Image (cartoon, rainbow, N blue to C red; front, side, top):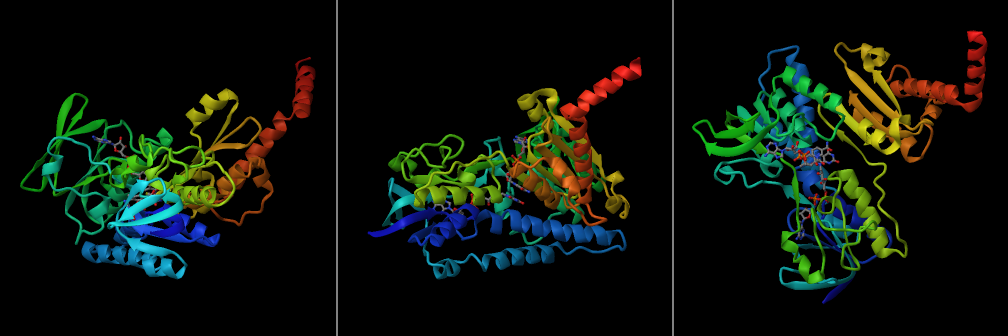
Amino acid sequence: MKVFDLIVIGSGAAGLTSAFTALGFGKKVLIVEKHRSGGECTWSGCVPSKGLINEASDVHIARQFADIKVDTAAILKRVRLISEGIYEHETPEVLEKAGAVFVQGGAEFVSPNIISVNGEQFQAKKIVIATGSSPMVPPIPGLDAVPFLTNDNFFEQDSLPASMVVLGAGAIGMELSQAMCRLGVKVTVVEMTPEVMFREEPEFSAIIRDKLTAEGVSFYLGAKASKFERSELGVKVYAEQNGKEIIVEAEALLVALGRSPNTADLNLDAAGIETDRGIKVDAYLQTAAKGVYACGDVAGPYLLSHMANFQGKIATMNAVLPIRRKANYEHVAWATFTDPEFARAGLTEAEAREQCGDSIRVYNYDFDKLDRAKTKAGDMGRIKLITSRKGKVLGAHIIGKRAGELIAEVQVMKTLGLNFAKLQGVIHPYPTYADALRQIAQQVFLDNLLNHPVVRFFRWVGGIFKSK
Ligand SMILES: Cc1cc2nc3c(=O)[nH]c(=O)nc-3n(C[C@H](O)[C@H](O)[C@H](O)COP(=O)(O)OP(=O)(O)OC[C@H]3O[C@@H](n4cnc5c(N)ncnc54)[C@H](O)[C@@H]3O)c2cc1C
Ligand SMILES: NC(=O)c1ccc[n+]([C@@H]2O[C@H](COP(=O)([O-])OP(=O)(O)OC[C@H]3O[C@@H](n4cnc5c(N)ncnc54)[C@H](O)[C@@H]3O)[C@@H](O)[C@H]2O)c1
């Protein structure tokens, strides 16, 4: 039996980070991949979705100047080429050149340190499970009898249909609905919660819903899908909204209702690995089986590529080095690439109030004050910054152009524990979107000053004399 220092099961964002981390420490690494290296991010997630969003954005701009015909077949082909381009840096050959052994096939556990792939057994001191997640397809009557798309096959379509029902107004539903609508698809979204993007600040979610509505996307909110039927056009979706039945019909259906962890084929019982919503891990990302770690979507709790990288590194370092580092999620951040973009770091206002009480400070900044935004008609944006009583960042929410880039500056302040007021002294080029953050910092600085005990004392004394 071949023996390794580390076996990595799955070569998506988490698995690749894990393998490269271990290789960097000179370890003998086996990578086992059932499908294609690169995983969801490269083939059916971040990369093709952002590729499609970029194409749709160009079309949206072009339509303002000319009556153009959109060739969605050519667009989807170009999107697939982007995935191929990223894959060039993640192929089995590249991984083997970097020093890993790559085996194609599905891995299953034989014991906590032995796996079987295509009937052959491999042993390792440590194992990292990074098998990702799959689209969650709930057992709603009729769903198994109608043709439907998920992110797994969405980007493989030859061309886009004329109409589509999108089930779920989460990250996938919103990004793809706007992109498809811009490319000429009549999109109807059916979402069971009362608002889109349930993880975001509600007022920001409403802004994005209004924007998509204005562009032509139709929404049924508070509507839970209850039945599906084939129809002459394609598919009929039945949903319950406020006790009434609604029926939406379209050529195609996209199911974007969340994810299920890929655990079923792993024979986890043989290794004593436990699951709840995904593979159960401790703070060090170790599973119930000693020496077996899990990271990325299969473990959660944040199903994001950069969190898969973050966890992949920690899990692997804990596995191969004599250190133990906890995965700390205090500084999680993400961006949703609708137009305008959405980005979030840390707590919402409600969460901050629950944790810190009403001593928190909330700064709301509108881009109508920002010169850079004024240079482009219709450029909207908003920032909500939530700080502690002393000015340290608890949460930040940005909607607007380049929100995904802007949040990085807040992330640095937050992660390094710097007082946000410090940013007021940092020179920002003019006119930029980032200058909005400097302007907010100016206000935090002033509030810090006004809250300083000495200043408060003199203001109090001043108040006494004034009242006399
Ligand atoms: C449409 C869409 C857009 C997204 N956009 C973003 C975004 O913009 N930003 C962001 O941060 N995140 C985004 N995500 C989420 C991101 O794609 C995932 O969080 C990330 O890819 C998870 O990486 P992973 O390594 O955990 O899993 P995966 O990438 O799924 O990799 C798991 C790998 O394991 C393999 N595997 C499974 N079972 C076995 C087995 N038994 N044996 C061997 N191999 C196995 C699979 O074939 C796969 O290659 C998006 C997701 C979707 C669906
Ligand atoms: N930009 C990004 O970072 C990005 C983009 C896309 C996806 N992702 C990741 O992929 C994951 C999966 O995305 P997703 O959009 O599939 O899931 P999601 O959890 O974001 O949204 C699923 C939505 O479906 C709704 N829903 C569930 N059952 C329903 C029913 N029966 N009828 C109507 N609505 C129903 C839920 O209320 C929810 O709003 C996300 O958690 C996110 O982490 C990230």
